[in-house]
Figure 1 (cartoon, rainbow over the protein chains, first blue to last red):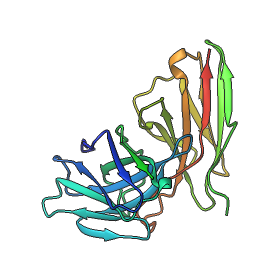
Figure 2 (tube, rainbow over the protein chains, first blue to last red):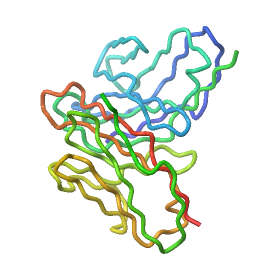
Figure 3 (cartoon, helix red, strand yellow):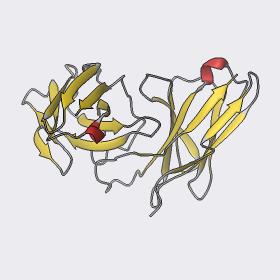
Figure 4 (spheres, helix red, strand yellow):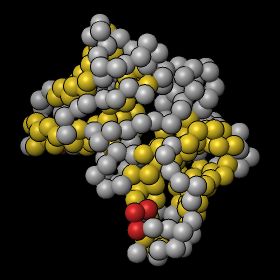
Length: 114
Length: 116
């Protein structure tokens, strides 16, 4: 699985847009980019997944440049409840990929202040 | 529709003891993965069960073993507990159906194991 690098922590304020960037220089052709969110004392929760360009759902957007060596998770108008750890994962996790064991890094601890 | 459930929620053991943790997958899922999460770290993959067999394994010693039952539920067993085994143990379910969308894994709330 490709190694990922993301900031250890970030701070923002309620109502702001937050962008968390993840670097994955060694991403392989079959790899997808997936983001998970984890609140304290809970299991991680899937947020969004993409392969290239832009993906948007009701929670977030994921921007992936053409070279796919990085990606940016965008959270619009954050609230206090968005305070959590966000993990960027890269691997063959797309449709038909087989749902293999996931490799998590340390993630980005996002703190939202009032 | 119940999500992934785990039991117990908390457990305290002493060094050298053995522990069994249990997981019931989300309805419709046939694959169960187990993860260990130490304080301040991301979850680390232990192993995955599918069709009642261990299919993948992370970098964990054979003190860690598991089982999957015909109803897809699973157990994680840890023998000869060490202080370093204290962690949150997470179970995740998914399906290996090739028609499944994005192979998302659904995590349970975890079991907090403390080894004294």
